[in-house]
Image 1 (cartoon, rainbow, N blue to C red):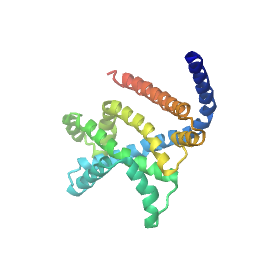
Image 2: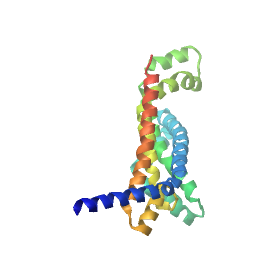
Image 3: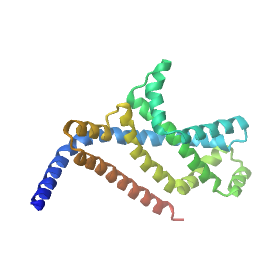
Image 4: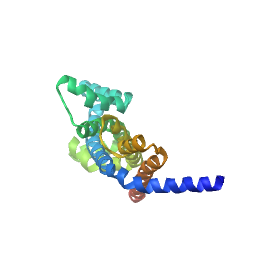
Length: 226
């Protein structure tokens, strides 16, 4: 009796899992595109904030420090709520996708700034002095010498941030953006079958985090060859 009930339950679970899979994956393009946009613009912003924090000018350093302090010290959910629900009170209205893109980029930019700063500071100062002796300006030194080495140093941390960002895209469901978790919640609220629906969502995140882990692992091995 118990065995038949378990068998029936597993059969129903498999049936629901297969039925929900294509429906939930309709939110995958949103999650993946937000990850790409977030890491691209967040990386550029992180590089800018990093340069401000390393600057000898007190005002730039203070702004960079305040930025990382604020965005690392407040929850991403609060930041998303402010962009989507708070800004309209100030006369600025953003779509859910725009608010999510900006919020994720601003948040990841603060973490990227610290990662990049750590990578730059790990490079021997003698290389900066050698570049200056060769007549390179700051931009040339960063582009030709510092950044290529920094990428190799920060690659493990960068991989972790990309994976974290992919999982954090699930937070945008809170501002009514239809992605993987939002569709999952819609299915569970209508059909009262949370386990198969959340199993599909977990499969999505597990698959892509595994792919990203393998990709960054391969990059690390290639760049570790002297």
